[in-house]
Image (tube, rainbow, N blue to C red; front, side, top):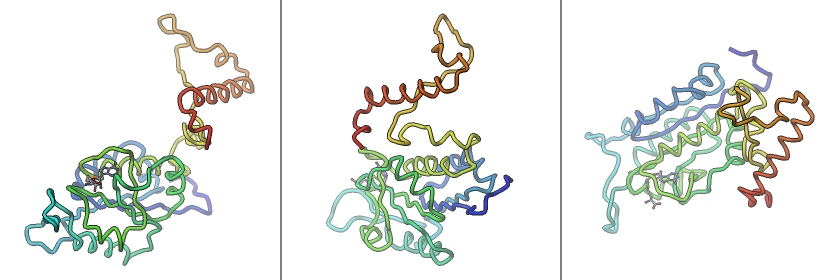
Length: 235
Ligand code: SAH
């Protein structure tokens, strides 16, 4: 364990899914695994089927109105969320949905400041709308395309959030100069050797002149943002 600062809190993320096996590998690998081992975050994956009262463990049913596809029922989702909220307060109960607010770096930054969040993954045609009206506090999309389930969205969000928690990344600074922080794209990065197949690393990076290197980095960042993502500079 690291020496922890006085304001230290352990963030807790509860993910509700019908496909826990899809997320268990992900949350127990790499940075997310390390963050949990360091005691900086707790991630729990809940199998929605454990909460259904249906004897065949079904969690979906036909939609009213005769539409095609299946819809996830209220009962198991309500039971799972109620079991969690009976234990602790949640800052947000998030539903992953293509019609939700678009996930981006500012949203990741603000979610990383929370203590407890729930992420509910939809499947099939989605979930009974009454759950969205009565239990969900935030609806989030990871982009304008439709996935078969919310698991990839939950994985994307958890990864982007957890890497921002102080102490999770080795170098404390490294999350701050990533692309999109300050609405700028990151400068290019290089590693050894300084020359490969005649391709050279910019001389300035080998100069050892810290102030000039910093200046180069900022100028590269601005130039790349102007060229590749001018919309970010308007923000
Ligand atoms: N019929 C729905 C889509 C259902 S897709 C519609 O047209 O809006 C099944 C589930 O996958 C959704 O309930 C949601 O949980 C998840 N999902 C699909 N695309 C997503 C996206 N872009 N962002 C976040 N979650 C998404």
